[in-house]
Length: 110
Image (cartoon, rainbow, N blue to C red):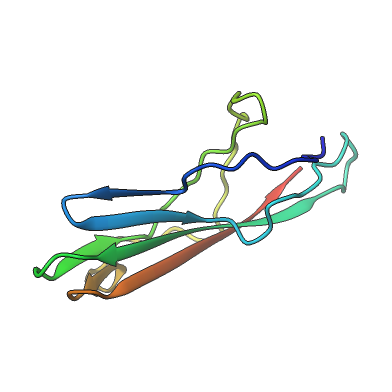
């Protein structure tokens, strides 16, 4: 499948003075046919902007994106991680007033 014309969508939402924006650096990519070693590498991100006067903490660890086809159908996901880690205090990032936090997830489609 190849997305020839990306559909323009609003990729951000603001909730209680916090803006969440999805980041997809490569807007068009090809999903390989069913071949044993065919892979497409993808990168998805989330940027959080604290527009409030209150500092907030956000946990990005374990973020899993949903991927839809051009007609809105969800792809069947399978997730694997290289390691299992406990949630630690360092996973909760602090965003001060006006500060952005950005997190990316790298993956493969096959």
